[in-house]
Length: 263
Ligand SMILES: C[S@@+](CC[C@H](N)C(=O)[O-])C[C@H]1O[C@@H](n2cnc3c(N)ncnc32)[C@H](O)[C@@H]1O
Image: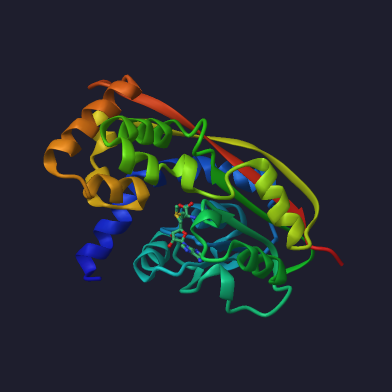
């Protein structure tokens, strides 16, 4: 990807779902019990939103990020100078056993090729007694932005919208599924819970702007439509959100899971 495309992809992510990242990261860090002095790994760190929140709490020298997309890894390096960011997928982490005090992963499980293998790797690189924690959007319920988007998509393009609806196609987005995934990786004292993130918008246009860029499944769906359907989607989405030209805020629920490495 050329330099300006790299910048555009990372900037589009930050303006879309990334807008909830800092607020969600604060909740995940609390839920995981991250404390000063710990060494932490952020798996699937993307553009570095959780990495930055971890670096603020622990110092960047105590934080490592792993991300398979080179452009996103580059964006994370710029966002969090001093943190080590490696290009790697969860399923094959390039670290020896037991090196991190805690391993976190925000909004990544459902994008992994093999989540079972990924979570086993998260646990392998965490020291005995350390916490592995993650969260995934409540796509089918109270992630207001994406729920309204997919409801609008289903209204405008019933068949294609239903086939792509993340509330239907995404795995690992209920407390029960997350608990089973953690327990099957051998993690102990598994707990689940809800995290609520927030994002502020200047207007509906501010919210809509990154969607046609093709970032994330919702962006890819938007970019795949012809102009007429895209305009219909935009208008329906706006109506469903009840948003106009004034500033507004949306909330988004994520389901979180944490467990302790035995030993
Ligand atoms: C929705 S983004 C979340 C990014 C970041 N954690 C955040 O909270 O903003 C999903 C991220 O998972 C990454 N990803 C996809 N497959 C992955 C895998 N197998 N292992 C680790 N990360 C993966 C993507 O490249 C992308 O950066």
